[in-house]
Image 1 (cartoon, rainbow, N blue to C red):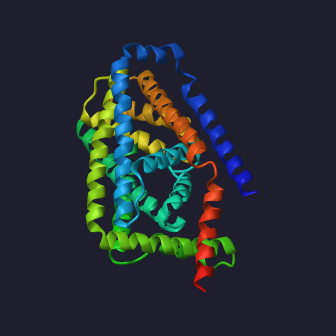
Image 2: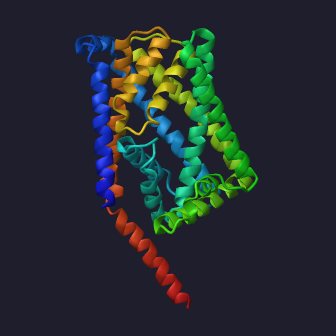
Image 3: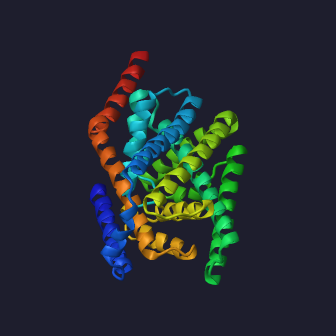
Length: 347
């Protein structure tokens, strides 16, 4: 039943995205968009994919650092595979880049850690990613704001959004470093923990367990945390190179500020609850390119290029899923069977 509801929601949001894309793109000619690709250089394309691979390795390295801080050792190649699988699932799942994390955590149980502990390391990695991506967006806004003029009706919402983001991130880390819950506090604030609904009570307990592990990481593994932030900076550099190469492939010559801005809008598009960011990615790029005085055809061409890259990674991820995660249910079943047998042997 739950799977049917999830599938229905996914299909609904895909249809919403397709309709939105139609209304966005109906004014633009396909021939004009394809003309942007006339500068395509396959040598640069090869370098581009090398950078994409390097970026995935760096992001896997960050997760590996977090896992090792919990004394969880997993072969790096396996972690890379699990991350790509998670990315593939996130790509087709409605929501802000979430959906593949439970699968990653389940695959991680093959190497010893409990599902909850594995999921907590993924949550830590995800929050560091959101933190650094948000700061990247704010930096991009500042750089573009210095160079260009924002529309008056956009300045206030952007400013308020930036303040809210900084406030939430600051509050999260302040509570973690003082051994206080953040997500559990929000959960209970809305009275969700007082209901008699069984799955909500189970969810509350899981949130508490995951956050206790996260609190322990931020308080007692500061070296790993700082190293993770440093790795995130490296990922920023690679991301900048990725989009510099992508824009060069399309014959666009832009500076650092503009690339920051484009990357930020792509990140924002992925936060909307539309699978594959259908329609939202195109709208975001049109808005970003309009602000930096670049053509709409170029914006759509870049959005299509980014989408093709993401689809390719998703295909690779699902191929890997059939190899490494096709029997996920059996992995969990075997894990808890072994655990039960150990308990019985100790009696």
